Image (cartoon, rainbow, N blue to C red):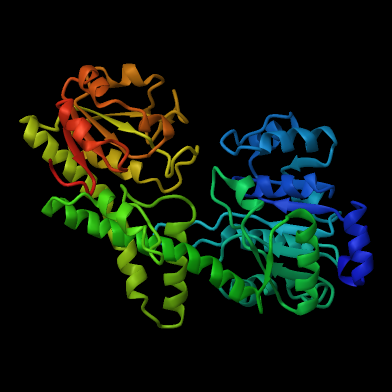
Length: 457
């Protein structure tokens, strides 16, 4: 095994080009698995470590788990066939024999909206015992600025003097920048940030990533600055979605269609369009805003705009239910004992992922109001989600339904014809929270239509 921290530049490049550098990726989920496959596909032998035994078994059996990530199925087949990638549940099988250890672990929120770094801390403690001196750790997980410098390094070092950052092991960050459903495209297109505890380690990381990815690698002065950039870009989106959501609620009341406003506004050179919706979900935006708020709290700052953005986006499921209430009022029906179909439960279109999806909150609120909730999502057929057995067929799901709520703008739902809905439903109430339906066509089909930010027609 090579000791990457002891190599000079030419030795490192030769080791990379000849495939002698061994990689271990800890956490092979939505981002970690494509990352591991990219490293393996570049010719570097890669081990993926995950605590999910079914995921590991499926991978080693040749079953690709991310069907909604175009392009990676072919890469997966190739690296499995060439035995460049294997998976294991045992971290002790991957770390000691690897030159580079990548951490692609989840950083969710706890019940108090405080970022939970327990997975990173737990792995950090294991790295203290398992890491071979001379190795390199690269953190790809999205973390608060300062977490590496203030917490992770000391956890990995421990108190026995065996490991010392910058002396006999390296540590740096290269935050992932990928949109679920488009990861291969983003890995081939979006620049990456490289930060480390010193210039030598940053240079090593840059050389490795340059071999694997064909994108620009932007040097950052340290780990915390790189992590600050990652948070800034995502919190920017969360805040701007909140701004548009707030306008959507306003425009509804005065008869302005927010979609018409946004389509015209985006023709201005400095306007970056964001769209309203039932809420902001996923493992990134909500969590990243709370990471920023947690960071501010630790240094006695108050990020009022970030906080307000979260409040607005978290209120949107209530607003969607309010639109539904209004539809039932027009239909002169009671929501209690009605059948309501939720279309789409993924937190974003065309991805099989329900992390922090607003659909869960909407479903629970409807059940509290006494409605019988049905779910149809092309990515979650005949499953049990939120305690509800999902529908296998859209036509059957629509039969005897009193209302439909479009929560996720899957491609399939863009093709829904208003007349089709009106002929299948018992009561033709439709709430479109994602702007997928033409409201004039909806009116022509005699739907009782409510569009988020669309106004009544």
